[in-house]
Length: 60
Image (cartoon, rainbow, N blue to C red):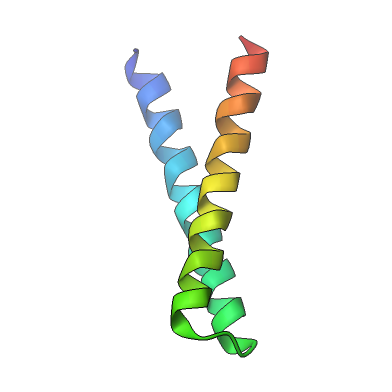
């Protein structure tokens, strides 16, 4: 794995975590309990990262 690929992977992970945090915060502010908001954020993070990895796999 080259250095540029590693940086791209770290950027994708960072973006996925930010999406998850935003999703959890929105769910929490929308009235969900903290544990439910955490599950929403975790699923948003997993979905965003899975979409990125799927796109990279299809591209190569």
